Length: 143
Image 1: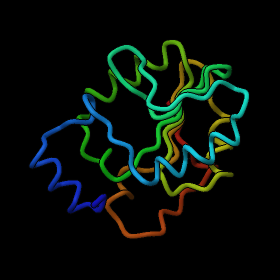
Image 2: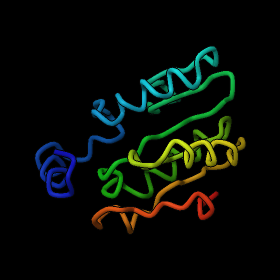
Image 3: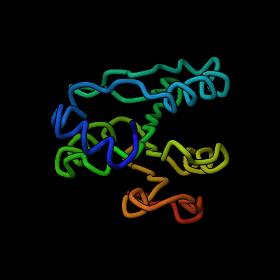
């Protein structure tokens, strides 16, 4: 039910729950399995609390936050997301990636990440369009 219509229905029924509750999705679970292998020995955490927020993945030894963003992020409050990013990037590097991004693209984003910055590996305008997303690691946005 993570289609654009499904997300809109959930939003109407449950409201804006993004900051309060973050149920794991099947794609998040898949990424959890992959990242557990990749970051073995790097103190990887899932749904890790940072201040009042929870982040999808936190790699403690790298001071790295990874956020697996699906279609629902299109509907998050931009002002609230900026505050969240500001809090996270004070101490950590942040990489936001679409759940269908390739592992190679994600690694390229991680290599660009540094404390105080956010690397975004997707375009919100494209999230409402059909596949493919044509995510290009050379066009990753660094804020």
